[in-house]
Length: 125
Image (cartoon, one colour):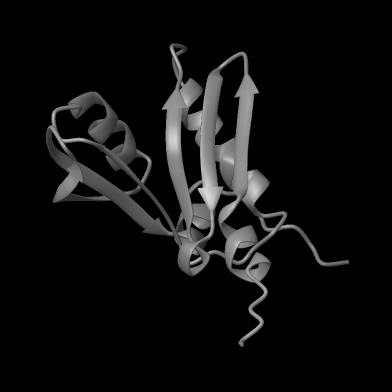
């Protein structure tokens, strides 16, 4: 019988992060392939989404490295698509993500997002 320590395969996928502030909230998870997946972003304040995205990137610097930051939005959500495009993400139409329609995957290499948004990685010192 093979003794598999299942924890090493489960724990990397249980890392959920979030920021909640006067700007709204942002939720992400880390795991697969050293990537960070942005799960939900909600802000009603001008510039709030941008500030929340930067706060997420700052939080991610505490435990790097990451290959890519990515997420999904519905193909009909043109407001979200414009936000992610302006934030520096590449948008690609995909099928099979949502049962009721197409989606857009937005992604950008982590290091490029840090540079674009002027977020510095934490020192190891």
